[in-house]
Amino acid sequence: MIKMQHIENLEVKPILFLDLDGTVRKPTKGKQFAVHPQDYELYPNIEKLIWSYRENGYIIAGITNQGGVSHGFKTPIEVEQELDFLISLFTKSPFHIIKACLHQEGGKVFPYNRKSLCRKPNIGMLALIEYELHNHGFVIDWDNSMLIGDREEDRKCAENAELKFIWADSWRGDKELIN
Image 1 (cartoon, helix red, strand yellow):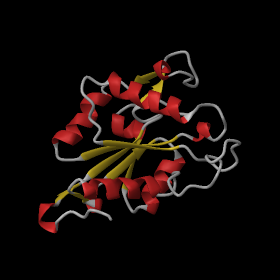
Image 2 (cartoon, one colour):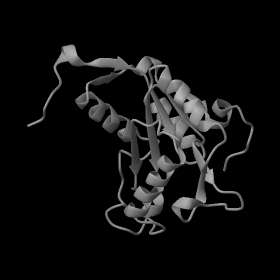
Image 3 (tube, one colour):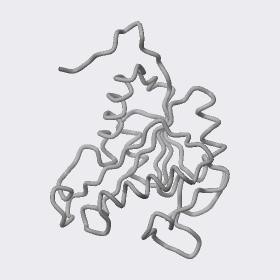
Image 4 (cartoon, helix red, strand yellow):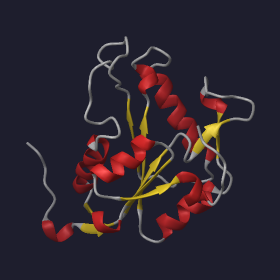
């Protein structure tokens, strides 16, 4: 049986959806791709920037496609370790929730080589977050929410969800080219 919140206990809040790779974190200097969790670093001043949204009432949600699992480049446990390491890079984690999609069609590792509605540009991760937040007493204010990302699938995900989209380099205030 699904436990539903009483309507009078729900709080309406905007949400800041953050792609992780190329938006919040990047491979450490000298590396094109991260192989180990420690191969990541935060973009400069990202912690302060994210916290400014949280302090202004936003729920902070990380969303990331991790199709490398479907291709056998990493395991689900390694993705979890990478996310744990990401959190450890912050003085205090600004995230309320983080979701990762491990699926990508065309991979070789079952069941992750199958289509998933969670994989951006689909909006499945956003819907899962909405459901989980509702069960914790929150309703997403979609009209005042936004998605920050560095790739076309991030922009398309925002478009599919009818969300405001901002390119990561513009949002961070840098002009660094992101692959």
